[in-house]
Image (cartoon, rainbow, N blue to C red; front, side, top):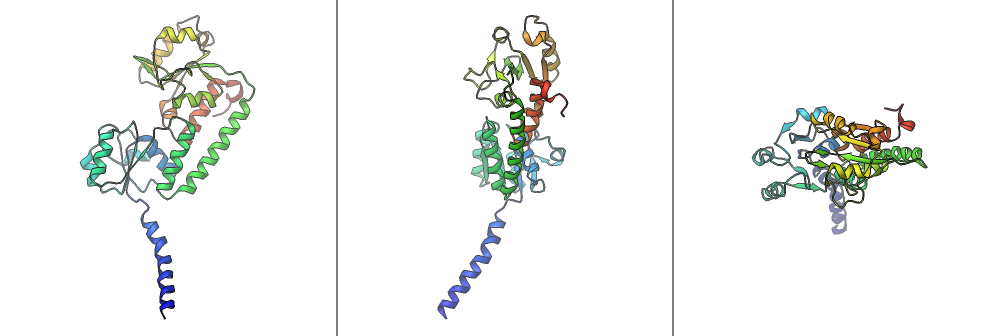
Length: 284
């Protein structure tokens, strides 16, 4: 009798465990970073997403979500009042004080690293999928992205790699170093970063430093109204290789500044077309 009772208890436990595990999957998520918000949509978790930061403007549906403040100054009281079972943040984008305050209120918060390489982005994406019960979906997306990136790389094998200056700021002038996420676009897109020897991720530079390295291509990340003026300014330097060849381009910040696997692929395709139009000019 005792043995039979033990078996019943074990069977009941096995039946209950999956339900408990399922109940732990977050159903009320708040995202405080654009890349996280975008990733949640790719993973099909938009229904669980109840609120976002004011910077989370993509995809379109994210703009209809409740706003809980900016990246650096979210409304803690509003977040608490929404009773989230998971808040998602990114180190460096969201302040440590914000993260610690939310923790002190008993709110579960997961903090991702900024993701300075494609491998970091993949790791974060799969981790997010695991957190929300969509790990298989995350791994499937990553596999598809990697296949397309490999295809791009195969088409660039053996080709000349132009010297590239990647500009993200004008006043002061800011470029991209080897440890930056921007460097990944240049590397995977078939170019060489002229400031790959710089320790800083996004170093402040002088015009003279850029001109002395004489890039073949200048890529300007959109910086509001000043972007077109920067393009015109660089074009005035007649001895600059990029100006001579009229290879000064503008890329949309939204396509190259949100570290997710899918957005990385989208941005990479654009950069590859810019660096190697002879290979990718006809593709969109």
